[in-house]
Length: 83
Image (tube, rainbow, N blue to C red; front, side, top):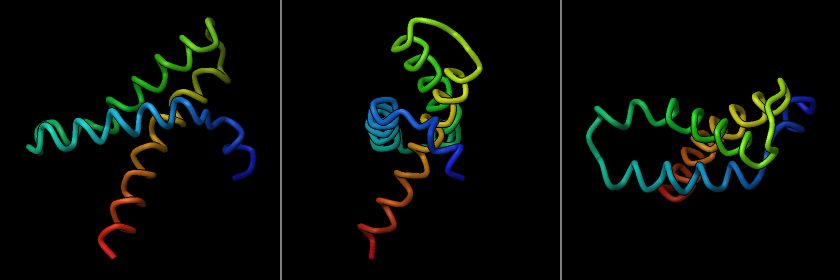
């Protein structure tokens, strides 16, 4: 797990978390909500490629991991707030 966490990019996670939150609350229908992980993965990938100005396997993994982890982070915050 420690090896995977080195690929997390906090800026990408933060941006994806905010964009995912906005999408979730602006478009409450399930037609869009079920695609939020896919959207965050693509956004995370695009942001990480833009930040590093290049493409490599590490950059791709970092972007995808950061985008997808933002959806998990949102769920963790939501559960924390509900309790």
